Length: 452
Image 1: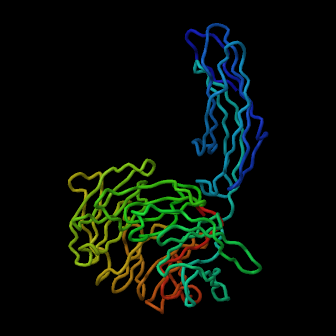
Image 2: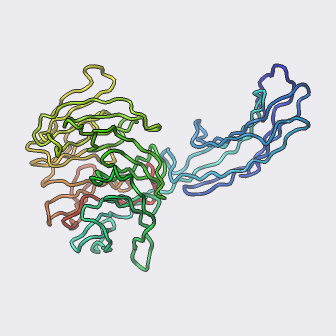
Image 3: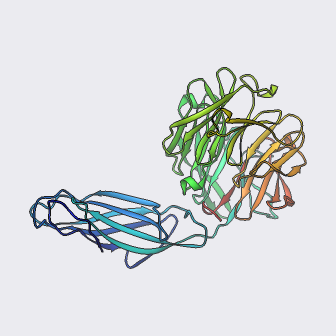
């Protein structure tokens, strides 16, 4: 198929393009490596001279848009005769499609543009088979038996399995959906393959990633999945004293957002399409900072002096929430500082969060909800409205997006336990699971990333 735009001084026919592979149609699923191959012909000019043609492959939904592309130039210009090249490359299909549903129609375009701006193109249609989402139980670091990894299948009558591993008592973990990999972190990041041996799943070392020494001097701040809306694949997000990092399932560093000297990271995460960091300054102020998600460029910040005693000083505590799509810095007395970067001089607003007593802990859930643990614990929706009060303190909440339930880590010291609760009414489901006294959080394993 040729798309012709007129040249000025050169007379020549437009390029010709033909897909060789894939064939007439294509069906793919996450994790495949698809060989792409097409032939391009750039004709010799009837008059004048021309430069080398460029090629481009675009893959995206049939409705429009591009998920993946590759480009380059043909081997030479058509100086004495037509140029005939065969282009070969590979498309590594992500584990998830950025659309909901069990199947999505896709379109593959091979386009060649000659030196005069004329184009030739060929198209292939196909479909992306989305793997039905399944959960594979809850993982957490620690146990009543000691240091290691614990795992419980969903509502299993069997007790949780435990694998002793050389993990520190304050180790955090996240399961990378679709990669069969657990990442743990304390002073570095370690990946663990999950290999089935008989009836058990034994973690075995996969990789270790070195973190810059200046980032690890105070240990890890947090560890969670990078949002699949931005990554499509299974990546991990970690927070350190001076930076946020995204690593892929092989341990390769993909993205980083670094703080300025004199800033200490408390929490971070993606809010409204930006990386937002809550930090403490050298003068013990609190600061919200917004970064460009793709380039890492710093876009702006807002700073205030905390009024809550527990948030003051070099050991002061504060947490990052996201209410109505804007960042909120939460102080220990329940005061929230809501930041609207587009509001000019009045960009920061003081709000009160639910509950009474000093905030002991708080956090964000992958489904957009929040929780605050005070004299009583509260689970909030994305706007900050209390959905329910929870009896006992909360240390963490993990979301099972396949079953749409919440795993709530509650209790204190040796009485810590995991309780499954419906995401709708938050009614407890099944029996509580003892977590061990050192558990900091958990991660529900799924067979793939992406939407339900």
